Structure formats: structure tokens, C-alpha cells
Image 1 (cartoon, one colour):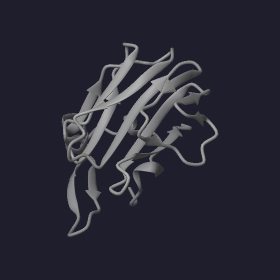
Image 2 (tube, rainbow, N blue to C red):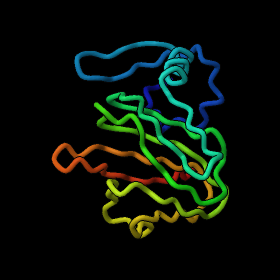
Image 3 (cartoon, rainbow, N blue to C red):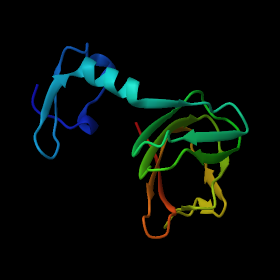
Image 4 (cartoon, helix red, strand yellow):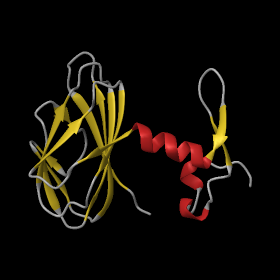
Length: 151
């Protein structure tokens, strides 16, 4: 197979895990198998319970956290952060099955997004969402981007 970016792959489920992958990074590339990469992601991602009224995103004081929702979300929720000491970035992956409102923390800033009227973020389309937060070292606020996976 020719070199491809992850975003160019049609269906990851079609792979058996023995395929070789190369991770491009500063200081040198790393070669591994797709299976090993999947295991790495599973080990370092944090399951987030999404069934309660409040969804707590526990960053575990990690510099960079990958958080994955435990169940589909079909009703409005309040988001909260915990254990943020030392954290500078997080990614929260989750799935909604209906239009919902998320109440977000006061220190979250979402620029140029008509879905956000403080403190509520309205998500209309069902599907897989990604919220990425990056800590602003000057203000201490979290700069947030929200995207819907169109696949």
C-alpha cells in the first residue's frame, strides 16, 4: 500500500493489525504495526462516563489527554474538568444520537462558533464529535474547538 495519512484511510476495520505504520515526529520517525498502535491508543485513552447529568473530563494531570465517551449521549449534559494541573491539551471524543445542549465551564472560550452562546453549546446533528481544548498560558482559559466527524 502507498503511504497514506490516517485521514485518507477508508475503513480502519478492513485492516487486520499486522500492517506496518510509521509515525512521523520531530526527532525521528517510529515504525510499528497497526495492532500495536491501536493498543497504545487504548492504553493511553481515558474512558469518560457519559451517562450522568454531569460529564467530568478527568485529565489525570497529564500534559495531553485523550478522553473517550463511554456511551451515546441523547440528552443535555454539563461538562466539567478535573485534575488539570500540568495539562495543556485534551481531546474528548463522544457520540450524540439527538440534538443536545452542553453546558460548558466558564473558563472555556469558543471563537467564531454560532453554536455557542455562553454557557451553552448546542449540537444539532447526531454523530461523532471531537472537542479539543488547549490551555492559554496567559489567560488560563481553555480555547475550544468542536468538530463533527462527517464519515
